[in-house]
Length: 118
Ligand code: AMP
Ligand code: ZN
Image 1 (tube, rainbow, N blue to C red):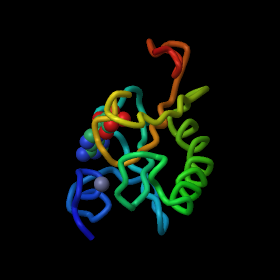
Image 2: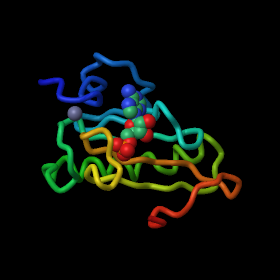
Image 3: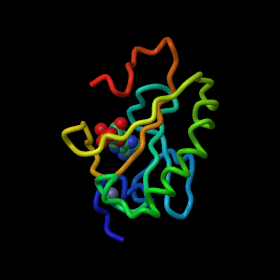
């Protein structure tokens, strides 16, 4: 397997990460610069920059992992809500060119906005 980006390096165990979930197609780990406590990234193990280019099986596995994790992430940091989002392409703010879902625990005290507040 090629190390095509920093997230591939994490998948391969070549770069450190605080891993919170793994299955045969998906890995989740804490964001290194969390927007709020518990900010987690869920990624497919396969390298693909854009969601639309991901094989359907990996996209399905990614959403299955999201469904499994989103409530547990929120509960782990005792947050009442969460924001779930994908920056899909550089013009949307995507910096790491490997598909990733942000799960960001939210509370009424944080200063964040709505995901569609572009
Ligand atoms: P995006 O703008 O959607 O590409 O966001 C990339 C996210 O990856 C940012 O929130 C970064 O803080 C996070 N990130 C970058 N490198 C690492 C890393 N080595 N481990 C964990 N998170 C990372
Ligand atoms: Zn990659």
